[in-house]
Image (tube, rainbow, N blue to C red; front, side, top):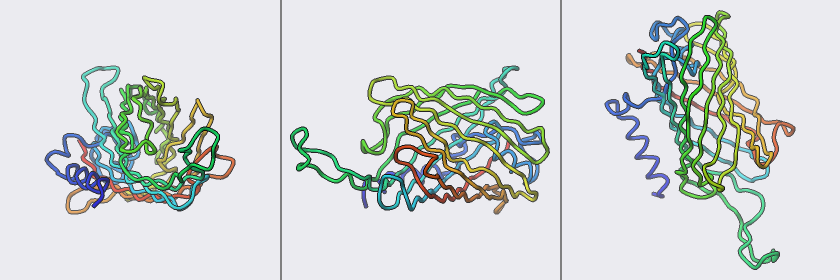
Length: 292
């Protein structure tokens, strides 16, 4: 078994432990009814609201059959923990934290790495596929409820946990985060979550990441809308990727455990990217929900 597979197995086993996991699971916030509990409709709204008071443990598996400027498939297993905390502040009553660690297999990038004298293209090796851990991301939101939804800001960071240089930026980054959610229209959720990465050194690049939120509740726990893949803009290189996404999912209780399961299909048109980017992708997401 390769080292990457060992890392993945250990992480999944640790996160799956219900005693340890309930203390660190990923955050969302209050549900549409403000109760954090309720039926599957309330949970479906809460599970799709990044400011809700809902603890979540999420596993996402993304398969990319085609990538611009690369050959072959790529694959990402995302492990995410969301955990809200009560602050006791009237202005920001909850602090929602989200931690993400990816396990990545890249496509084979076009081109090669020169290993000979400068300007001598005869001495080079292919870039080839790479597998391992990616960079760890932590973002958080101090949430302020309003009569129409919520707004929030908070600190975040990116840690250079990638096991190979090709899988991360080998740089610590500060990532201030913001969110706006509009939930005043029945059965609809609109919003935007974003963060900007500032490197603490000269190794990494600056980039803007954000996620548009459009969700329609269909009843009985079913929902559809925009996916949860991030749009990215590298403000140093000018590269960007804006995948078009469609998601369908359902919140259901299995053996007393509420779960959110959804599938997302995404396509990035040629004019919606610059630089390497997934052309097509499909994602399966399974989340354990812990109301209250």
